[in-house]
Length: 292
Image (tube, rainbow, N blue to C red; front, side):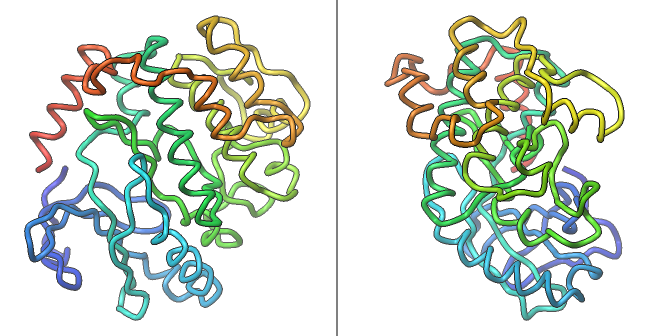
């Protein structure tokens, strides 16, 4: 967490701000505290988007749907104020680093961690889809790792950003390595697209690049649409599942419920606090102590 800058607000709505958590295409993200002392993430919409009437309309619909998303593995939307200047929304704060940061610092996760990660993501997608939403941009930087499991953030935001300047070629928001073939082609982006992204996330967490490691975005997207993934190096127990998630045909991919059954945990992982390797667990613990 970074300290507030001199020109940053000290409060947004009824939430006192304590520091900066980051920034993205949508705007700035702050650590805040409710009047009762609960830590929250406060997302402030940047001016260019706030002035876009189409964005505001879409974001209002998606944010209201996001408020209905429950489940243990999501960061719940707490409050929204689109009438404010600038508009903002507040979500539950997850005191943990992103999956992207953990893998960058400590490398690939072992099979047990991948199974717990996959099961948590599947539970999150069940809750998101049950609210009538599709995440559309599930990726390692949108997954936070807490001591008791993963949390998915920023659901409901991608659809609101469609058609704005924050898009990949073709006008669709997404991250090329995690976009399903139908998303790249400009087709219907439904729940199966999130399942494709889940499979790509598991590959990334295992240290794999199933469609190649480098090159321009359009090259990577071509491979996703036309070539089969290379799953060499993925644990044997996960290879068939990930291959199914990465199927070209959306109808051939498993549902989140089927992924949960396939993972076959049912408490077998032991206490959830032991789900990450020791160094990654220390990183999560350090993040929590430094950011609360």
